[in-house]
Length: 224
Image (cartoon, rainbow, N blue to C red):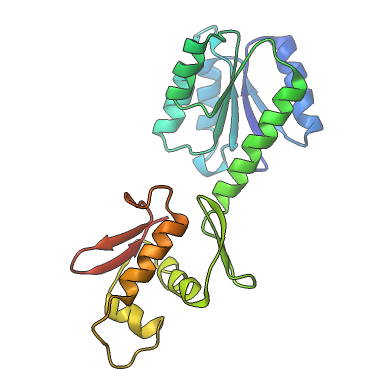
């Protein structure tokens, strides 16, 4: 998680102090705002790349609903974790919060041990996301959306070829030369077969791939 730690949006002074101390015990530095406007001003002073990767957000604020901030940061491209802490704890409130961009929702009053457990869980997800598509050459494995995947030598070599050039369309002939070592290019569906294998291994929905794309008539493209 970012060295900035956690962004805390909470207007109750006593609870905010307790939360800051609790986060410090988890080795997480807290940046605290007590209103929507205060939160916006704090975020504007920081480069987007240095925003905390975890937001703890109250809903009942003096100048509005904390979900407004959640919506705003998601529209700006924030892909870290958001945990809502709110006295508005009905099922309907939780659904609204999750639909509006929160990753988790904890109703007040809450147990601090449970809060710590949820933060640990979200931190693991953040770490996985930040290291997504890491290639481990020694163990011939890659960290994908489903977790670590161990590959055959050819599968790993194919991934290296396309992941080293994300977004670029790479032709079938180029892959046959660089991955399989063909000098004279045969008519074969080898690349298509292995591309399909990678989809099954990595894509959450292989029928609707987001990462291993086929560009009809041109070749193949990897998207992070």
